[in-house]
Length: 195
Ligand code: ATP
Image 1 (cartoon, protein in one colour):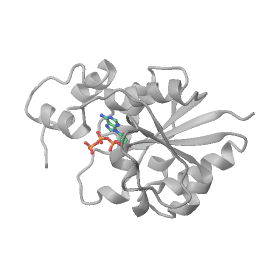
Image 2: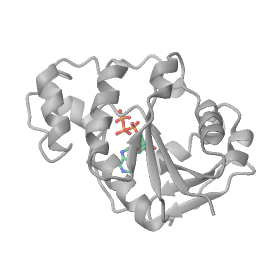
Image 3: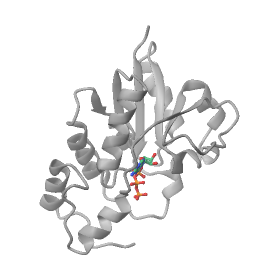
């Protein structure tokens, strides 16, 4: 049997405890052997939104991923640059890990946008999709997707709120791992906001 490998993409601007608890709950409930965080270079559905340079988001994601030995970070979307399409990344991971069972992790808000992704049908053949949440709401997913809800505790935190808090000079301790808070402070990130 191949390993069960979770893939968790996002802009991670910054990564926060919502991402961390989603990942930890996914390890348990989906019996994952490994989980790979994949920070996007640019998200096609977030074009026109100002983003922190990818090297910072990658470094912060690495700091978050230090929380568990089964976590790792794939910098290939950042290295590739341009718009990041999950189907490209998944094809590369499938080639690198031919025996692995790939499980794409996401929150319900992201799952709702799947029909707008590049080649959703092809993506659906390459991976299973696992959506964090209580599983109460039925999800409308593109034909062919195997979507599995998994229970995740509710964490009412978004990167948007964290950026706003820093810009207002408020503390973000507890919203992000300490190593991420230290990185944000050391590099002066999010002090001004365009939002
Ligand atoms: P932003 O506020 O900038 O839109 P975000 O906090 O939603 O950012 P992303 O990097 O865009 O973070 O999200 C990556 C993935 O994490 C998405 O699939 C999203 O649904 C999920 N996610 C983000 N925050 C949470 C949370 N608090 N609970 C569950 N899932 C989350």
